[in-house]
Amino acid sequence: MALDSRQLASREQFDRQSRNYGSSHILADTSDVLTALAADPNGGGRPALDVATGGGHTAALLAEKGWTVTASDLSPAMLERASELASGRDLRIVTALHEAEHLPYPDGSFDLVTCRVAAHHFSDPAAFVAETFRILRPGARLVLIDGSVPDGEQEAAEWLHNVEKLRDPSHGRFLAPAEWTSLCAKAGFTVESCALTPFKQPDLEWYFETAATSPENRTAVRELVASAPPAARRAFDLCEEEGKTVWWWPRLTLVARRP
Ligand SMILES: C[S@@+](CC[C@H](N)C(=O)[O-])C[C@H]1O[C@@H](n2cnc3c(N)ncnc32)[C@H](O)[C@@H]1O
Image 1 (cartoon, rainbow, N blue to C red):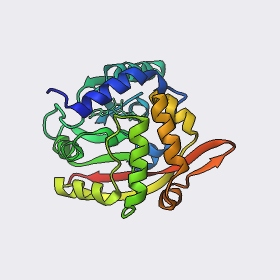
Image 2 (image 1 turned 60 degrees about the vertical axis):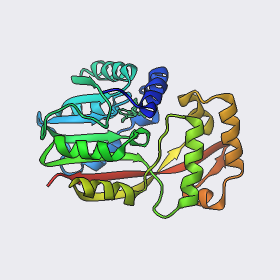
Image 3 (image 1 turned 135 degrees about the vertical axis):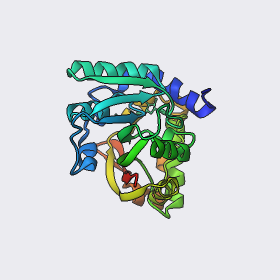
Image 4 (image 1 turned 90 degrees about the horizontal axis):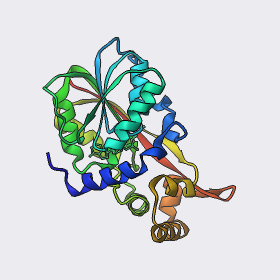
């Protein structure tokens, strides 16, 4: 299918920046995925799809745990990085180039779908959830991890949206827990858990580097940080630590099951 403008922006952005998402990136720590997989982490050869796999950290963890992994993304360069990561660890994954909003697989073909720190780029999160429901077998799980905003914190959410959009114009929107829960319920899922945990943005300058933010946009973000409303300072614990601007994203972990 032809990519829409947001998908094209993501492809361009991540093709350009793929080398910044390697083993030194904060996403290399996959303990959040392991926690979300909880009582059933081992695949025993069952098929799993990792949507928007990026540098492949989640896909590699699943392969290590015995899942038969398809790692998908709309960025060819990211898929190359994911393959390199897996082969460097002697793991086998298959890569697939496609967008998250249209999953080219038959109904009921996977026992697990994961999607970590990517859905805020999607142009149509509802289509992604509906497609995921379709390709999961009855009884199988979706594990979704993404940046989020607390329910009912409109002003803080708006501030973070403006910051993220300037840092990386391919950013779409962080959805609040109530929005994800509602999308999943509408698609037919039973939401088993949905929680926010703080996740540290350790240094604004590092964060600019990972996205190659333009000098003008860096200045605009620094101005937004300096003038952040109290609601945003409180919601994200925005502060200076040893000369670095840091904040804490509310990271959403949602586990939903196809009945
Ligand atoms: C931060 S990376 C993902 C990190 C990765 N999931 C992990 O666990 O390390 C975000 C990825 O989302 C991908 N992406 C963005 N929009 C997408 C879309 N609509 N469909 C598929 N992939 C998309 C980008 O190409 C990028 O590789």
